[in-house]
Image (cartoon, rainbow, N blue to C red):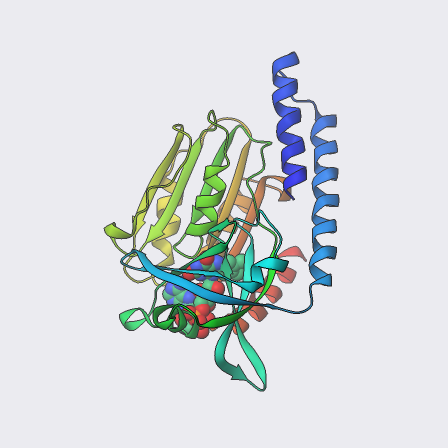
Length: 297
Ligand SMILES: Cc1cc2nc3c(=O)[nH]c(=O)nc-3n(C[C@H](O)[C@H](O)[C@H](O)COP(=O)(O)OP(=O)(O)OC[C@H]3O[C@@H](n4cnc5c(N)ncnc54)[C@H](O)[C@@H]3O)c2cc1C
């Protein structure tokens, strides 16, 4: 993934400097490299069958509704480097259904030499709406957790004149990683839904990338608020790359806007739902797969 992205960025800088243009042949070549790169990554992932055992190192509140759990220990010895923005499968300790571990998906907010930071958006009454959130609330240093993955990050394509990035608190970790990798001259708009004013974060990004915050104390309810806010952001000139990760109903609305009305194809759009109001993760995954097949048909 990263080799493909790096290739296209290098090509872009080179061609802009040489001729002020970015020819289609370079764009196609870069896409082939990116696809090959993704394929190699998936092959490598398939080989990693056994989850690794990590240890909770520390916990802290990032904002009132975002809790960071930092994990490390022996699991990192076999964990690949540079996975910021990728995702892991957390096998929640002591929780299983039908003899299968209870698994939840989370983004690697930051990877250092000896730790992974995972940021949990707190939801539900008193912030304990699901087993993952309860675990994050109660985890103590020294506790073990089995971790599967990593799965690949979904970076922003460098092949764009501007960026349109959308997400809620579950996507904030991935968005933070992606914005930090943009070149200094990148421009764009980022819309992030958070539960309270105090949940806004100071995100590292180029000066030309504007942050728009939407406050919704009840995530998952009133999906129309997010849609209205996204549509209210003026559409810029030039080739856009749009990235969107939200609740399922919000995703459907954004897909209709970005793919249906704005006509963005797969090369200009990453769109995903990270959860669905009223469903636990396993149920959401089933609905998401069926919806993706239907929308492709
Ligand atoms: C690739 C990927 C990366 C992700 N990265 C992150 C991340 O870094 N940080 C993060 O916080 N989440 C992330 N998520 C989302 C997270 O996996 C889900 O929110 C998950 O359902 C939470 O598990 P749970 O045990 O707390 O709740 P579940 O047991 O899955 O659900 C219990 C109830 O809570 C509701 N619910 C679940 N999530 C939320 C929410 N965010 N707000 C309101 N209600 C909710 C459900 O609809 C359900 O009714 C990611 C998801 C994906 C697919």
